[in-house]
Image (cartoon, rainbow, N blue to C red; front, side, top):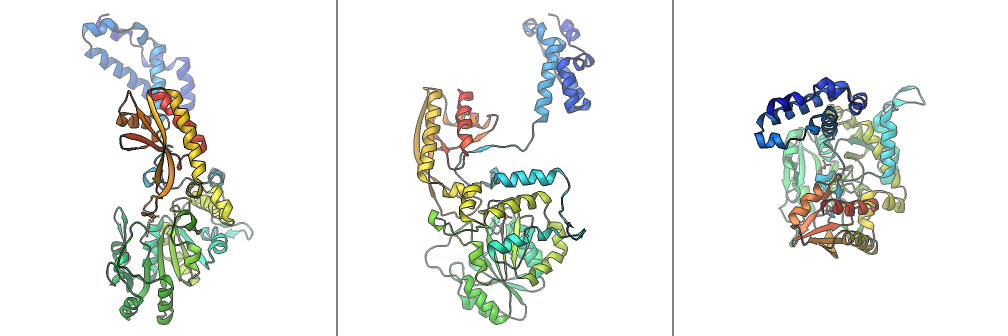
Length: 468
Ligand SMILES: *Cc1c(COP(=O)(O)O)cnc(C)c1O
């Protein structure tokens, strides 16, 4: 074929748009989108032809230049344009609160409630009974009081916002006493000393990195002191020759000096999970010490949506609700919808462990995981004799900067291929229609089953089918 002939054979955009396949697309995606895709496809075909030498032109299939063939390409281009930038992946890393993978998956009832509430209008700030304006803060109030024994509660965007709001409303213009061993950096630019400065409070450090005694707090108290603060060192552990003041110690000192005590707990663990190796403070237990204000995350170990929850004495929370920052940090109806359903699960320990995905992942039995790993190993080995497959023990992690020293004994499927490098296999799995995220250890691909849902096991096996 000559270059001129090929260029002339390319269909006009109008011709492409008249194709059957395309008119359906126009109805669904809109004329602008499809016309633009058609223009781009035709233009790129034209440029490609202009660059072709005679050999390439001779190899050009005239069938690929028909309006039907170009319409097919346009449809493909529209589909590619339509792909979301945020989409599900399968977490085979065994890290439960994987921050890069969106932390906590929501429980089914929370997802359904979000859809229900988001689809139409709701009583977000409307008191239906009285027929007047209501408050969004009252939505999770009763539930949280029931579960944790708190007086009052407020929800903000995340625990970082909660820290900001609590310090701004309770410590600005004065001093907050914090142990040197608890000046946490969470990640990003979130460091307790910086947040303190932003909030207008002055950080009064006490003790040393490894030892802080109750008397250190007591001796630091002066006329400028506004609060005593304890921060849970959720993402690191100081070991060896150590001492820290307990919440009870701080509450006692606070009472004696008429100063409020704040606890930044970081994660929002609601249950005692020590039987699963998780030796972390939990919200109801911390509340029971008589602490004035406690703040924690809505997703880290609580298993709900991203949020920060502030719970405690009414006189402090009321003030926060009226603080100018409250409006800037307030959360959306979808977060409330997800949080309420998640919190309802905590009315019964067994229900929470069964229905909240991250709690189920933490508490599932080794036998259950071994069984699932065996099933996955079997499915993968059936796919190709090129794959060496073995069930192996692994140590899974909580993640999300929580409980860094906790290793949960779990099961994984280790895969090596005789025809492909492990790196190439890992990359190929990430390109699956639902990307499979796995890790590599000792040149084997590790697929940890703790963080997979039952339905995902088969999808992971199918992903191997596609990379053969
Ligand atoms: C994780 C954490 C935060 C930040 O919580 P986000 O919900 O991620 O904003 C603050 N303080 C502590 C102690 C934490 O562990």
